[in-house]
Image (tube, rainbow, N blue to C red; front, side, top):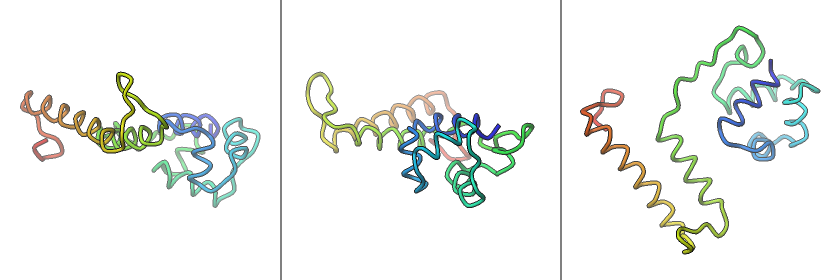
Length: 130
């Protein structure tokens, strides 16, 4: 159970094993072994996983536990998307290399587009106008 859920959570965040290992300050081989079910994390490492992914330990360890996470927020997704774009070396659009500012503007344009789409439908988000 732990192995499958760790792998699914990592993939849902779009991370490699190496990236997750770096974020948690553990080795990439340890992440791989946890995901293969060949090793179990100690309590400290389990706590790191829970905090990083925002899930209770029951979700990682028990078969019947369901994820407390609701649907992902577009804002969180876009921030992660922006970070990943900025991490890409030599990113281009129509053959032209993009600057950091241009990448940020691309993500902002997506946010504006989402806001326009939601407002056009007359919907509100979280009790606030979008």
